[in-house]
Image 1 (cartoon, one colour):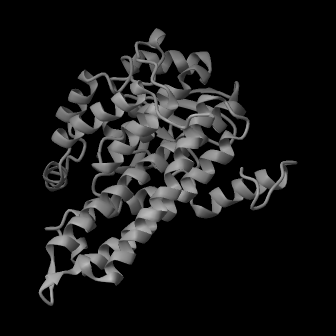
Image 2: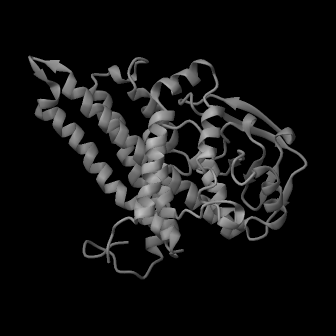
Image 3: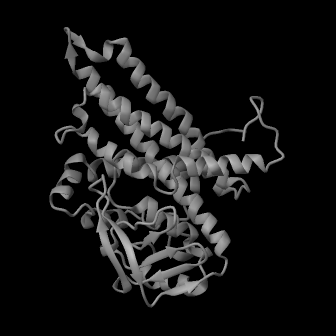
Length: 345
């Protein structure tokens, strides 16, 4: 078996990387913060024109039919630039499960969705605070028993403060005139939860790599005692530890993507493992990167704090560490598979 990406998958990643490197810069993110408009409509439209917003919609729904593995690679690039627009955690999520929604809710989504070009927010028990609700054409709400579609005008909400100024969050206070259904709810809820978990893990993977790259460049440029601080063994070890954590997280994310693509019965386990590993990598990247910067990394002038803020905000989205560990433990405990150092899950 060859564990390599296809040419098409890598091409999607390269296209995403090239586009975002020009369109989503630290200066543009800071500008959005200052203007209190972190969602850049011009950038959103440019991404739509590129065909990305509907990339993982089926061709019948006007999309490109991009598979889960290519999607993970694209989302990793979005994390690398700390893209403020919630394309991964909201738009891609809806695209993936559109066919699983009850018919009435599917019709309501398609009436507003414009083949993925318009934004629809998502609220779920593991991610209860929708992002950019005021810009959304609709809100999908998942509770403990059913799924709902609500128009923004029928939602009562209040803004809540986020550590990341790129995330405008709302607390739902009440809704009216909802389209509700519990049809196919168990499968729908599981698929939404798994995909939300995996897409967040992919974002964290990209963010971790960005923090490592920024720190590596900084320690080679910063001099102390007449030499770059990156030449000191203690600094090398700190950054090497980040690199190791990323390398352990990356295959878990890619395996979970392939698991969803192949409808593996253990895909929920694989997605939980991917998120758990990605969070550990991001935690270490935040901690060691700011130490490598001599605590300057959290100042406005340095770019590092942009990626740290988003990482901290995403770590608890779609389930914190305890939640993911419970999924892993309960799944393995109920399995008849061999466990131990000679086996893998």
